[in-house]
Image (cartoon, rainbow, N blue to C red; front, side, top):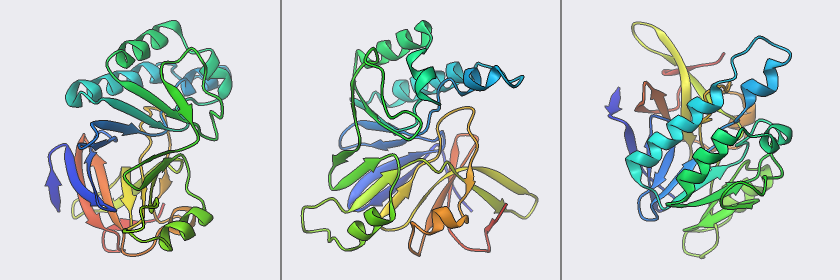
Length: 244
């Protein structure tokens, strides 16, 4: 088992990335922080019907503040489902709006829309878009089978977008270790597609071996497992990972 404190350095489609055990990605050459699936206000959205705490938003924003303090990014890119639903997005508490605005005074915010938040409130700082392209990489909320075909049929020297970084699936891994089995969020990628973990404090996950994830990835694949803000890198195989 190879452990790297806090971050794993990866070259993906010719671009250098840092994958952090706290669940975010950083592009050093662009000083860009990337997070996905914050699902802000999920607790508030569900607390009316279930006895759930409504403090997940505060915790998620606190961890976003910590990431910005660590890296001092020039850009924050949010890969969709930043809000649990459109209604809660437009009812975002003023204290959270103030915290996001404070973070945005020193950097650009770019909000990629997702299936949970197709419309981004105008009162939020920054700009919104369906996808964002940089260095031949498409940053979006979800990659489709058609996107996969485009990526597979493009070449590194064409100048066209040929790699995808996205969220949506909240990937998690169940790992087989000598002492015990552990489950946690993770990054997973092949040579053309990289799926980010959910950054939100109150989010579930989909096992990386599920057909919905595996249908989008070719082999070989690599998992970067997030555990207590450290990150552990493994090739995907039945030796290390289990379903469930």
